[in-house]
Image 1 (cartoon, rainbow over the protein chains, first blue to last red):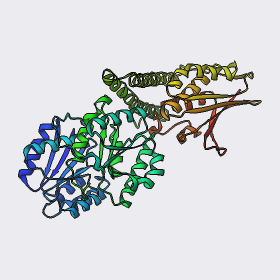
Image 2 (cartoon, rainbow over the protein chains, first blue to last red; image 1 turned 180 degrees about the vertical axis):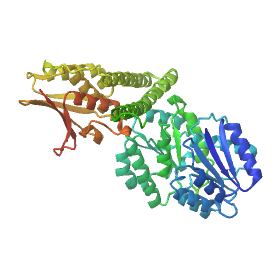
Image 3 (cartoon, helix red, strand yellow; image 1 turned 60 degrees about the vertical axis):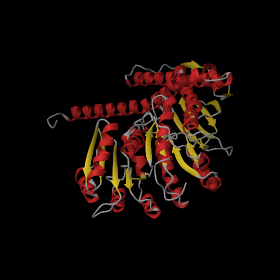
Image 4 (cartoon, chains in turn blue, red; image 1 turned 90 degrees about the vertical axis):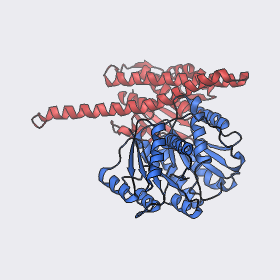
Length: 289
Length: 233
């Protein structure tokens, strides 16, 4: 069963998040905690199940702050493979930057309206818990000319469907394609500064062609993003594999999200709409992207 | 369990290991099958929406390629089961390698044409070797399939040489190297290596059945990957 660890000292916010999650994800187990140190204690004592899990955590909590809790979670072998979504009322750029430097998977301003909590729950389910949701909303269309999407996919047919889905969900966005992990290792660092508009999102397959090729590439991309001071650019693994060990290994190497390719490739456009809504329209980053 | 004779305990352990290996193979192959059928389903959904002959032809080609690949994956699974169940036996007889190679190339021609790939054969067209022609064909077919379908290699050169007590198949192509486990001498693979590329797994199993050996060869500076399969005859 999917598990959500929800750490927030505000009982009303916890109630709103719980209600939204239960409306969208079923079955789901929600474990509520009112502080970061209780979350750490729980994980240390009970461990985390192999089923899809995600931690949704408030930034401002008493005793151990969200940032301190995040640091401990990402240093701990028992929990570093679990994605952490941090919510906050702040949009203070230096705090957002610090959260990404400590390894947060996504940083979001806390929703205000009930409907926004539902959107958040759908996005969390789609991006971190292997689900596909139809998006019925008509989002505010961002200016696609302000960011590029880097796609790393070695299967020509999958690339065909990814192009199709991108065209449908982000029409006009600049796409930079790589067909092998070796090509990324050789070329991306060199061409990074000349990619116009600047990279906004990296989407990659895991089996490139082997699993280890993708995992090694994730580590290299993470290092590149640190070197380029672009730690907040999301790296999304998009794979057919739904094996927990593949997801855990990807998160351990700092993937921001792991999405499973839907069984019918023509429906990937739904996943991409969620991707767009969440990573383009919703998450906060330290830099104006 | 403690009261069991050591032989029985060993048997149970090896059965459990075999079962776990088979499960990991099936899990990995299912990944490849799901990926292929995902593309097939997607193409079926998109086909009615195509506009123009070129786009339709492109989709039909993709559909053909993926259907063929899925069929091959099932055939490989069947072969794998036959080997594991001891139903596949080595039946050596003299044959000319050139006819086995030509046979495979002819069979694979539609697939190669759609993928704009070519198999170039170089070798003595008369000499015969003593081996199991059917299994040699399967080895070549699986290698061709892996290199063109999975690795998208455009050109593969296959040559052969005959010596007094052995004969050798030499393969060269431009592209990524094949996984290390293909060239390892041990009979057993780690569970995570099983089935990631079932075509290569079949190449390895069939080569072992023929007492063959697969080894990498140093590149001669033209940037091509090279490896050889050596068989007794």
